[in-house]
Image (cartoon, rainbow, N blue to C red):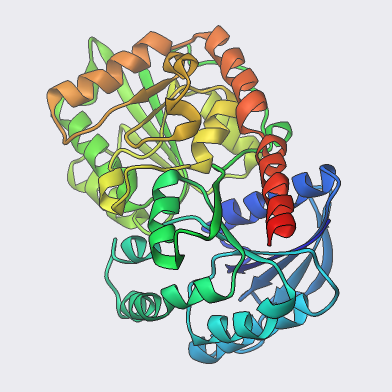
Length: 392
């Protein structure tokens, strides 16, 4: 099966997009390993050399944009989409949702007659755009509202990472359109199993990712400040790896509370340094304020990385890959609600219960291989592609 997978990735070299880049490369590699021929094209705003590259033992194409004007850039993006689509006869055109607008609709109109087009949705876009306000996001929101329902006329199916997103999108694009829910995965072979544990008499918490409001790090830091970063005679520290939109706000909050001694900001770390830091922590943090994103469900890639690495974690939202299996109660703790002493005690008690438990790390690793690996996820996608081709 010949598959074209086109992704508009923005800044290719940014720490903010590294997760997206790693995901789509892993998806395409897994599709090829399953016997498909997947052409991955990454469209980028970065001023880098375009063409075929080999990265992480995988071949794909980088397609830099030439236009600097933001409005004209959208036109160029979908001009490249079109050239990719007509470059050969593909069985499936797979698109990571690039935000809708007149140029995307025009592209779909020009190619849908002779192609099976499937779109992957990662979020409820209108809700995510309103998590923070800016002129640019308001324009994107208006475009989304006006054009989103037009997509249904030109596509053959949708893929979503949660049931909640699927239900929302089917209301938008029509309930009869073929759809499937496939949660995010992880390339377990690319993630090492943790090799050491925190032996100090403290509670060492960890966050990895692009810091956003829905991660709730402000809630955590304010809660820990109420107990002076100590619990049951255990000093508490928080290691933060990554940057993101809320990085400066969280850093300023830490400074204003005079908690710099307990909260360490590492910024972006490459894999070796990142995993070394993770090994010295007891428990990792997912999202603690998912309500700010307007969603009840999630499929966060960082939780899958935590699982493959073998570090127990805490989250606040529903995740089908973890919440439907009783085995995960050993290493996943879900806590909801506003800051309170009880809320904080639940997090810290869980941290003490799993501290230095090597068996849990092994269990997590096996769980990741069995349920979360991209090979498992993409096998479901290949079956869906075949169904779309077979049934029209």
